[in-house]
Length: 240
Image (cartoon, rainbow, N blue to C red; front, top):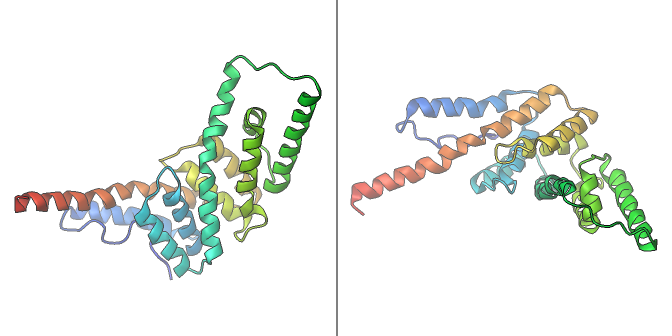
């Protein structure tokens, strides 16, 4: 069974604006017709986009949980998708901490405490590489300024990779979707996760399909807004 990737069919009544309704339906249908991604993966990617903290579109979350289950996803796969999307908040740290380099640097402790702190940071970095399989220079400032926060983030973010139920390629495609979404547009992370996805075997066609899915969330403006407009017009017509 293949459930819709975009907004549910009929979200925009044809008698409101038939041309717009047809164009929106055609746009939502394009990602479904790209053969590179199977139906379950499409639904999990769409779920991650709607469940990301920058969006939290509840009708879409429910629609794509149902669609993923209908297309064979397990409870564990859906949970893992939600947990992957839940890591997005750390971008406040990975974007913000590098800007602290513009401020006067704190005095470095060169004694035993300083050596212990440096050793602790190296241990955390090595553990990140072991559990996540990569390292990005953007993490260096987070690790330097907030090592215990970074260690806690590592513990949280590594759960789907230990080893998790989704294949690594799909996990990276999910990261691509939330970073590329119009509600986030995190270019630095997008580059990292495209590279990781390719390393795990993703093709350009698969990545293009993910970007198409993420691009259709603009239709949710109509999904949410048009019913409100119709309700308000009805209210005015009734004289309420």
